[in-house]
Image (cartoon, rainbow over all chains, first blue to last red; front, side):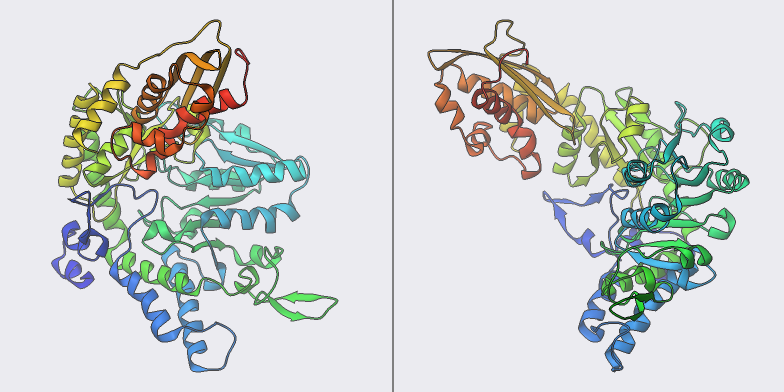
Length: 416
Length: 126
């Protein structure tokens, strides 16, 4: 299927849809229209097959036996690291650590780096757009170590207040930890600029790419960041696997996160020394099948091309915003400036609770999110309360957006 | 959701019964669901161990607000012990059809708030 897309030279979401077995099913008797991609994406056949194939043909533990299966699974699992490294431009695959998800990745850095490196009075700069996973771990360090959390705000268009950056960056700033693309507004933040500013005061930079890496090309060398984290399941991979990119010398200098098997070099009852990267941070038998599945997802993304994906979503986003603007009872949030965006629209239907909107859409087989999207501080700042949210991906079409809009019209009429 | 049930729920949502507050209430209690923002408050007057009067207020989705509206109609005049022994199943049945399990939390919020107020005998203006 991937080859057909390439040879056709055109990007056809209908062909791509055939790669995803889930679209064969119906929901409430209707074809599934999946518009909840910011929560998790669907999985192509190749990802599902890679996991199936691992368990059917290669299942064994890695780095343990000399037998054939162990050798094969070790190579497959390491290859998955290499694929992720290549995707983001990391020089060495050992700079890629597999975790459970982006949340665990940030926690790993908070414990392995923050707990040991940060002192009372040190500062961490985040933005108000952060997902809870990039707020709460730093609050843990604030309470344990007495660090200070500074927050870069947002204007009413949904753009970061970059003018305030110089004031918030001081010699006390040790880390700038920022979300690349907002899971609420879709805004793609100017992380290259922020990284450059952060470097002027000697701060490290952590990029939360959970919402960006599935949707646009990322090059860590171009950004200049020190760490980058993401979740596999938001980029067509399985749940239960995510990763950290970390600069080698930083990863080598940091303390381990979890202690035990596979992360050690030598153990005596008195003392242990640590394994080489990335295994130092992957204690215990890892999610081997998940890692291999993530590798297959990266292959699939690379085959379609992230630029193609971004352009397709941009087209859907423009179309959906245009359609929504036809109705004065649909209020959308964000997308008020020229900033780049990923395909996310938070919206409300006037007079209808977002749960009811999502519930009525579900009855037509349309999956959307409703709630606070794990970003309560941003929602409060923009007085957004609770919203419904559509988020697009490669397999979505303009026809699906039309069906969604028609259903919203029915919802509005019913609730009148 | 069947259209009859939807109409029944929308009717209660648009024209809530027993909506408001009771100034000289014996008991009152308010609780919400943080993950969706729904909030329900009940004010109660009890006489001779019977629920003499009930008013509710709050905000939220159609399911949560319609459920509590229906609930107030069903419990007015009933013995307190009878109200306390109402089950989640009773509440879901009162909604006149099937409710998606995802919405159980919404549908059951009103009953939970009412039972907490009665079991805890939470005085008004707490």
